[in-house]
Length: 80
Image (cartoon, rainbow, N blue to C red; front, side):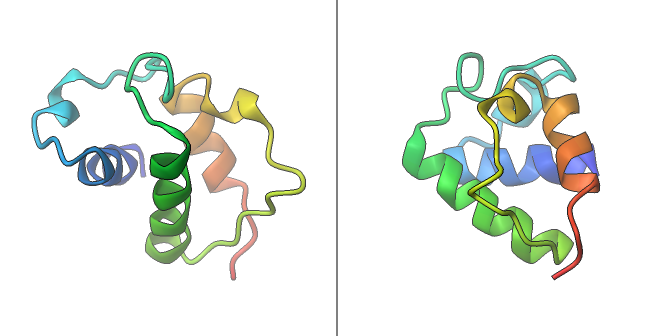
């Protein structure tokens, strides 16, 4: 799952080399430079790729504090 998320991040950032720079502890905003529009695009891709539904009312910014934390969040989402 983490590899798929990294590929989606690289796609959103339009930077194929980004995948090589991402680690489990990479902060999605601070380290990878995702802006608000890119975050929304990433979440939409995540929903499609993993067939889950993100509830923006309960989404917390802490989920973006590392790739591992975000992947764990996605893994715990209910199927759409």
